[in-house]
Amino acid sequence: MLKYVAGFLALSLTTPATAQIYFKPIDLSGPPLLAPETGYGVPMPKATPAEQKAALIWNLRSGLNVAALQCGFEPALRTLENYNAMLTNHRDELQSAFNTLSTYFKRTNKTPKAGQTALDVYGTRTYSSFSAVGGQLNFCNAAGRISNSALFAPRGQLGTLAQERLRELYDGVKSRAGEQQFGRAVVYYTPLYPSLDARCWKKNKYVSSCGVRPFF
Image 1 (cartoon, rainbow, N blue to C red):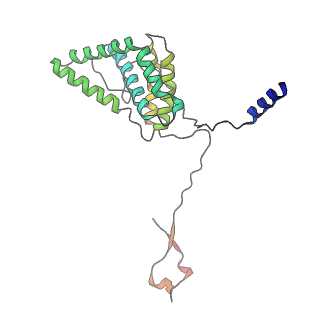
Image 2 (cartoon, one colour):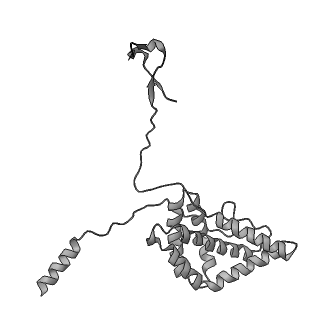
Image 3 (cartoon, one colour):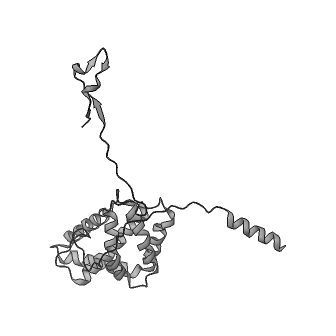
């Protein structure tokens, strides 16, 4: 019986592993954000420190929401599953952040209706700021790591995570850098063509002394 078990283990060890996608991203780490900055969220004039922190939390939620929709091409990142789990685990802190933001826009606008409109515009601009095209790989990679951290962050600490990692998420959107493990040589090629002057053609044959010219 033991020889059959040993044979099975040997076969298992020699069986090729399922292919995995490998991507080494650019280092996106940066200093913490204490408030939205230019390029890192919608500015909030006259906001209190509590309102600034609420904005960072809501920016983090928005970015991970976009990642849950955009990054399904790589299931191993688990951006959708982690995002849904974050909504459950950090429900109270997210609701508190939204309430704080609502209060800010009511306080800084003349009427409740104007405050609600400003809040809606803020939400739209925040979501659209995470729309990644050229930077999708880096954005999704960062979102996968950050959403995993959000999944295990203690309740009440999502704001701290937003301060520490939101810059990384935004820089992923803006980054156009590709694979970092293997260097790539860039080759520039200028196509050449023969002269079209009549003097360079004799009986449909090209006069080689006329040489060639760059295409542009």
